[in-house]
Length: 375
Image (cartoon, rainbow, N blue to C red; front, side, top):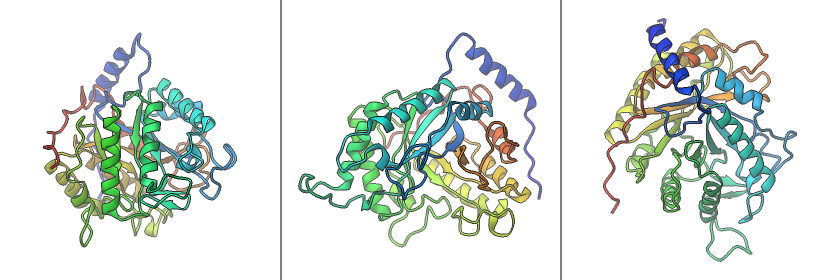
């Protein structure tokens, strides 16, 4: 069945006019906090080549150029999710942040902010650091009893001190923490959030679900599920957002990237899954963000992509970031095109749903009712 999107030409025109008037005479703002919805793309590259760690920049991995950032903003996005590797920013156990890599992060954030893009810093490590997993003891000469969890929290506190501007930068604690038990990750994530707030970090904090953060299996588990372990996520600032991921192929992994066959499940197969997690979030006063989703270029897959965007067009979803954009993707079927390339067809549904201030909402949604203090 063809999916039809209700036309909104007048509403969009008024929204764009409002946005342009608001921007007259004032500098571009990233708007992590003041945007009601954050809608954009993963601008990948800094996490590439995990077998070369820390690796050589612009040979093994890359950061987005100013031209890439400007192009993403020109399509209508107001944010990027920026994956990077922990081992490149902190190259030795309990060591300092690497000045050169930190400089590249700062440059990217500043260039993105100048383009009007919020940056979601995404530690793309799957709950590992080199061969260690969160919770593992660290080798000497680390203090006795020190674990990778202790180091992880200290790493985030150091990173938060480097990026205190909450309207430019948001924090993504850990991408797809599949290397440790789901319930262990839930404890670590909540502890890290609490330590960031105790250190007066006011940035948005995105907390991924355990395992692969899959929306499709959010309620799955014999003893623990993401639904049970994150229903009580509490942030005194009401700026914690639960991040989920969802791909459309046969096993939801995003690895079957052909345009036919297993490339995409039909759009209708996702309706109940999105509706169920949306109701769960409403019940438990949580806010959701779809941090990764992507499709090949077939017409069926574009219908599924459009359905995803329709199902998130409500205040329970703070937004989404498509996987992925960036200059090093080559022929990757899910990739978005860049400047001076033939436009990828995935851009059209994304552009129809990019948030425009003043169009769908005039101010950020009211924060959810705070949870009572945890016992």
